[in-house]
Image (cartoon, rainbow, N blue to C red):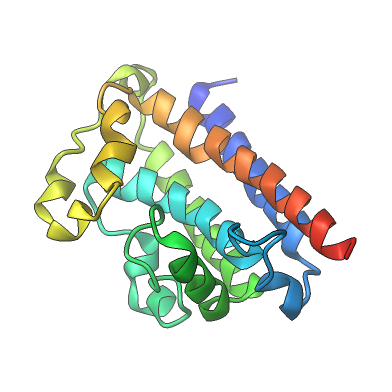
Length: 187
């Protein structure tokens, strides 16, 4: 199997697991957190495709995110410019602004964007470093914590960003979602 196909299958798997977890979530579960001080389910679900969108578009391509497009912004996906460092109040706001169906549709759009991007790759390109510093010209990336959160990513080639931010990081949050929902439903 070619690396691009393998990465695509990993992204599809993340999308499928996300749907399995939030496809039947109730409105009250969506805006609930498993414990005080933790993020609500809706935020964590939104964060997963938002991180993929950020990694593929902002980090790897210096391009606008899918969620910044009018059709996605209108569905609440741009409630926060950044997918990280939003704090609990911001996480609550995002959970209330988006719906499970909207997040899944957004995840589909991000997956399609990823497929189109992967189609441009030759095997050797995966070992190259993304030219990712141009996005920093947008001052919104000067948010507290953002630069610290991404500092260790500059030396990562494309394959590592796909394996880390786009899949591994997201799989961790899928486990968080599963645990959060189990705790909320056990109350």
